[in-house]
Length: 181
Ligand code: AMP
Ligand code: ZN
Image 1 (cartoon, helix red, strand yellow):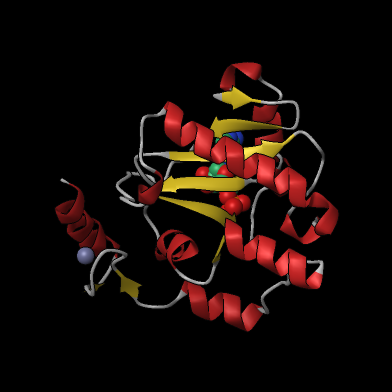
Image 2 (cartoon, protein in one colour):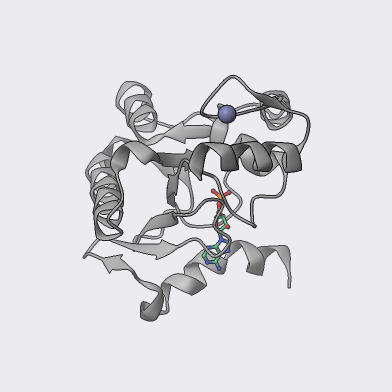
């Protein structure tokens, strides 16, 4: 499979209505195929917006719709908002704008690499509110430079619930279970 066709995986999934957990005129909620927590959903617009770097102020109402659908899926799954992170990756790998809706347990067999953890638990994750604020204030979403991206991917594995710093991913995963079992 070529890199390009891998990056188009979300668009392909979107074309299959059986994958839609919720859909509106403007956007769709699907399950993440490789969930990094007990609950992990993606909200995608029908409009062909490649990524956060193609957004401007005119997209703010659409972003609000994506957020409402995120709240909606949390409700449909009978979960609590306070147990979720809702936002975007600062360095997305897949085509088509997508909002991550992920539970904070991070208990999942698909969570394997340090990069996975740090992509949700450092400045590599841009909260929905912070992205909207940036758009309001500057009219665009700024790319982080490659040195910043690299150093954020490599920061120590700090637990999201306490001050514990893990030696490696197996150590962190074992520790996380203590918080959520
Ligand atoms: P990002 O790093 O923000 O581009 O995240 C892309 C997300 O899409 C990851 O969490 C992947 O697990 C997920 N993913 C990859 N391929 C698919 C697919 N075909 N259908 C649903 N989710 C996918
Ligand atoms: Zn902890």
